[in-house]
Image 1 (cartoon, helix red, strand yellow):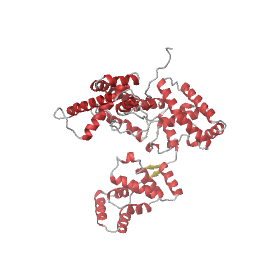
Image 2 (cartoon, one colour):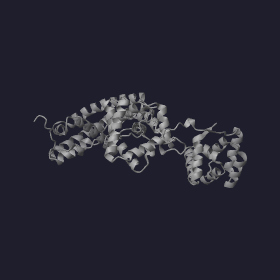
Image 3 (cartoon, one colour):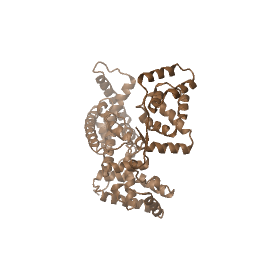
Image 4 (spheres, one colour):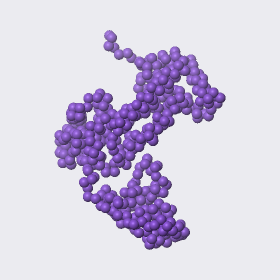
Length: 454
């Protein structure tokens, strides 16, 4: 009888991790564990405590504040209390606390927990910085720097905006953090990222770079999860009986693997992937329970992807062969000699005076003799989209490729770092490229991958 599990009236699946206080209050009332009088008492205490916090917010001068500010402070209060209630043994204990303990007392205990979690998250952030991957991926590096998630530890308001997560986080995890807010979200995000880094550090940074180049040579600008790509590659190597550490699987390996996996039903294929995972744990000596669980949590999505790829004969889109971009033949592009500063200034002044586009284009064609000068003119001469597009039309493929190399089509996330003229130039360039024939586009982008601009 001692092993009989205690049953609870409230279904914990109905409780919100992000708004725990509000959800448990609602569920407890719906289940008859709280009466009207209990709810009214709790609401009255919350309002009184809000007045107290508002007065402190105003340094004791007054409790009168803007409605938006008061709402934000209330959300912060409820989040803090909810954090404490979540820390209790079970939902029954949480409901009992609501009935017997003052709001101010629950807030005090929650505030202590927030302080502890804040310092824990800060410690994990330092660990993540230590096991950070060496990669070219923009969102990964931007998220991990001081202007990314580092903002949180300078801007987080533990007293009045505890439910907020002030940070710039664009890097997507393999297992996203959901239904959490405030310091809880940051702590969990960092814990997951630390585990992803721990796994990836079993492999050489150069091998990961070559793997991601095989996925897409422009991976540095993609919203891509590195851990997921490395895990998939590692499983692919084991399924193909290749060295898991090198993450190297050839096109022939992938074709043979497809022929073999096509013989299995979904269940048997999932079992083979599971066995490959166990073998990976053994070969990489992954013994940590947290990392093993995180990898296992990632398997359903990866398994579904592999099963679908086998059925649709697209396994080469899932398992990719590494590419070493340094071994590709290079095209050296020389810009030419730039004009002097005084001559360039006079050219820009003349372009400002010109009324007609054909006069501007003729002047540029006559005066501009180097690629660097042309690039400067496109940014400085306040030309229209039609004028810039006309100039693009006079360039050869190699010059267009050089323009793309210098002004790549960046994501919206990265474009915020650019000036308005730089953003406009990239937009016009992309529009020009998009209207070219597909074979010419392919030829130009192939040149981009081989180009060295001196």
